[in-house]
Image (tube, rainbow, N blue to C red):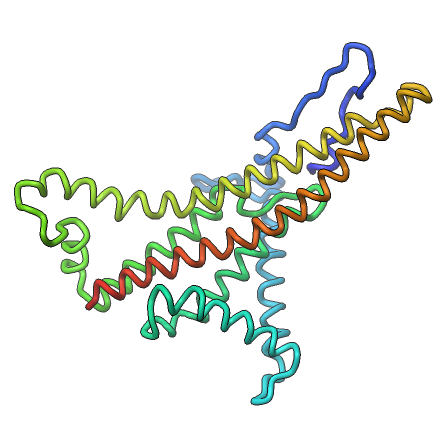
Length: 276
């Protein structure tokens, strides 16, 4: 775990000792139960974190929706505020009212991604989305849904034709435009959708680990009264920076959950627009 691993072999003011920053390898924990599944690391630290995110998402919405009534309670009002926020700031601006049937999915997606991100503030743990496999699966689900919606409302060939043969382009230029449009529509979109969430969670968690490792490295009471007091002051600064960055990282986690949901809604809106 990150906090336990932050205990260095040597500390500040120890002779011949230098700080060893955390490595990205920390995001690849050893599997507890290896599985013979292609592209799978087996059951590792991310598995219980994912289960926690799923259970918390289900539990929160079960709590919100319990004893729902026409005149909402405070609990129900919180849920309605979130639903209205997603409706007015995500769904309606990108899809219009015709996309209202997707609002429950978008609200669930936002809260699920948020809780997957928030596992990173548990001491010693990581955001689930700091493992690229999880954002990749989410982006793949969005891509499949987008394709399904476009095909349902427009037809398979009409949709693909509209993607790779955009209207208004002179016929000879399709030799250049069609490969570019194919790559951007069917490969780049899901890749960038994945990378944005993964890279932000990965980088933020790595910075937090640096503060945690650095604080542990600088704490050296055995260096003597003067140097011990100085090392404690340095460690206190690192701790304050860690706490401050945790608060900042929570904000980033909220923003990234919103951005991923917004882009998903934008892709759905493009599919619905193409249907018309």
